[in-house]
Length: 274
Image (cartoon, rainbow, N blue to C red):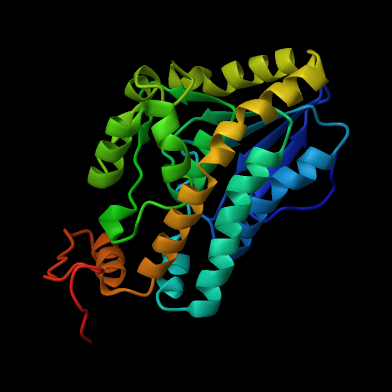
């Protein structure tokens, strides 16, 4: 097992070929700072190279999976070119490193997930969620395009119509509904999520590794075909970090009020004046 210490994460070797990654973050919702975000992106490559690991399970500490970047990080990003470029690289790495890891990854979604946390949860090869766990992709609520993983994988998981509905409205859905529409693999009572994931991981770790790796690699070609859409969505999300809607969206979120996106121009439709 890789002995490196990861910021905001713990890694446990369970002795049966299963590595348990627990997202701990910075607070009770397991939100991430800049270093945590970087390490969550990098850990998949390290575990892919670790010969003692056959299957990876990822979960969150306590009652949450991962809320993504914390508010301090999100506020610092506004208009920060260097920080935005770094974040874009890490967001891309998170997605591509999960896709390029041939070892099966199982997410045990024990609580709410958003941002980078939701990306890790839904990009896993098998996702087990608590029936009453709440999920939402909240990008448009804070004035950003739905980048990260969403444009890449939601249409393949739950269909274009539902993907558009949930990504445009930011409506929440519970784990039971997520399983019913195909956004996740399976819904179980919340107290059984991790047990279910670890049992399945042990089963896969005892299986034929080459065939499992090659099946995952082949299936992920469907996601690689959607690579241009992913790159576009990620770039457009980052552009939004320079705009007024993001400032209003993140301020409203912190102040716990409805945002006022009171702009009468739409980029690309008419000239934008300062």
